[in-house]
Image (cartoon, rainbow, N blue to C red; front, side, top):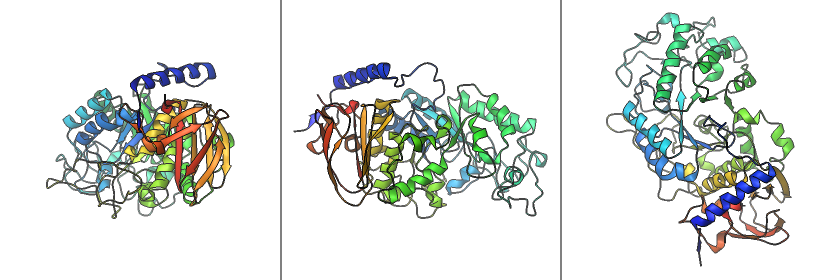
Length: 491
């Protein structure tokens, strides 16, 4: 017979976790964390979601699931088209796009804020549009002329043969030549910086709490510093810095950078049985880039299109990698949620006016069947293993990793006796007894039930029994995981 979680139980669990935190050095939230993107928050990139659909999702799912912040697609005016990348060719800094109007954007930010979800806006200011057309809101322009904003003198005109980046090892070319033919703004100029700062402050005035800076490695660090300094100190900055001559360490001194190398390594860990072992050890985590200023991720909109990382098409492996990201004490995790596509340029679908259609999710989105019609939203952010691990992560806080199992294509560890997770990356069943290090009792598998709530039931299949010596007998199928914490312990 299914046992329903009780609200009283949640209160008791949280009280217990707080007590353990005080007595074991586990993190306890304080007023010092003024920025929305911290080591103790969980974010999600909601790629190409309209403002109206995001407002609904914050209230119905994102907030209740425990997401703290959302990276949204660029809200500024862009060229007209049905490709996703039109958002990365701005024609002005008006907050009008095919994802919604300024009023709709402002309402979304407010609604999400009330649901406990901060908004991180994708900001594009390394370049403008490589076109001579009219923008979404009617802005007339040419490639190097944006009346009332920028003229030809405000752009870099580099010395390469084509004017574009030809030598990717040259810092000069990477930061002053054109990326894919896009006109490169001279961000060292005072008037250019002033326009960018005014745009970011406008977004802040609407409640936006931070920014993902697109193509940040193509902007000189010296140019970014005064822009960052001009914004309130509680503004989070996430810099897109891929491999190349621009050193990510410098950008991490004024914000965060995305850990793309780690994301690429996850593909091997979860695609080849047995490759995960040891990946959560202190030595492995210490070998990564600075944790306190790194955004950990499994994929984003670029990497799922270039094939360098796992994608929704990997189904359970993508879910497990996301769970692992949330299970380890590294970085500031960002889950990815996008839409299905066969044409890498195609957007999620638009109406007769060219406006992006509001996102809708399947009734019960799961990792078991992620292949959908082109343009349909996959809604990975709702997958039970991911939402369950958000709860798990918050229950274990800063507790250290203690490795307890590493063989037979399975890798498991506990976090300070507050939570245990086991990943079977192999193609065979895993049927063994393992010492979990968890206190005796009956728990619910959060990889199955998802986020704890008063309406969630713990079926017999989801129950985990831990003996007095901390041992548990597992029956895990291929490519699957189990996770339980003090937050899922039953009465």
